[in-house]
Length: 67
Image 1 (spheres, one colour):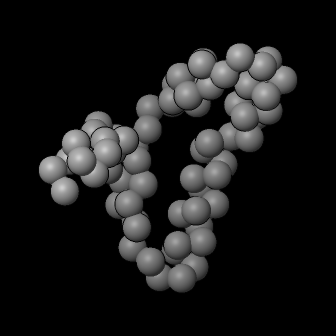
Image 2: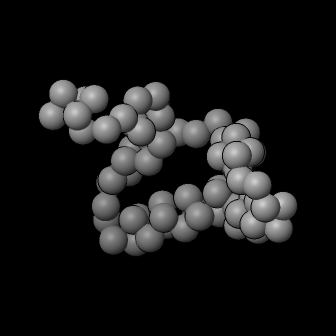
């Protein structure tokens, strides 16, 4: 399983375009780090190897990736 190696400021950048202050606050408080830790923990429990990848280009469409 591959996960993006996101910078610490990634959650703030992800929510910066959300207009509603309540929704923006809730999303920020969810804690992207906590979610990622839980994914990694569950993968380890099941023996699934994990790698961290550079997020550059990971949001490209299949058409843009030449697939």
